[in-house]
Length: 253
Ligand code: PXL
Image (tube, rainbow, N blue to C red; front, side, top):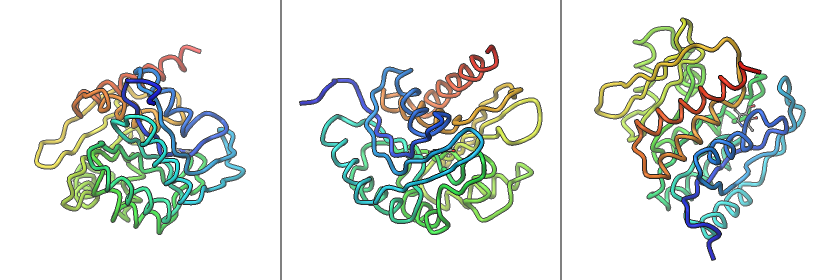
């Protein structure tokens, strides 16, 4: 029997012992919007905010078993995918999600930790581009991630950025939300590139401080809104407002 009648978002991601990123951030974001979390843990990481000391990656079969049980236990209305660690997990997750194509998938392409440790192998990136990206509704790279995913340097102009977005999407249906937090200037501008539509800009004030896990929070908050029946534009606006509120709370302390 289902525990709740409300929608669930299935989080497929890694844990971070510091609480700064990963599933802790994902669950907090879903909870803020009254959406319940179902969970498939891909890796357990031991880390502080400054350094990763250990990463234990789950067997792909365990990730799949968690996803299957989660889908059997509760109505899942959307999926948020974060850290995937390696090719086997990317492939297994993509294969399973391809068979459940009514749930929108929001993909935060986690490539490295804030401290620079690799969280997805090269072969994992190739598989993510080939197998997972084509079945995602939205992928949310920051500028450095967009560069890595397209085998390029971080874009320094709008033209370079547009070229990388086209290459990333390569004719697929996925929308791309490029997070401009790593660019320079007094505004942090994220841009949504949806197939056949003009780009939409989301502007926020650039923050004085840094905060870990903003990518996790944003993608989970977007998935929460999609699970509640929102459209992509309103989901992104609401999710950005949530991340801005989290920054405000941090900067007041
Ligand atoms: O913020 C990216 C991220 C996602 N998931 C896990 C992480 C990190 C960054 O450190 O550790 C588990």
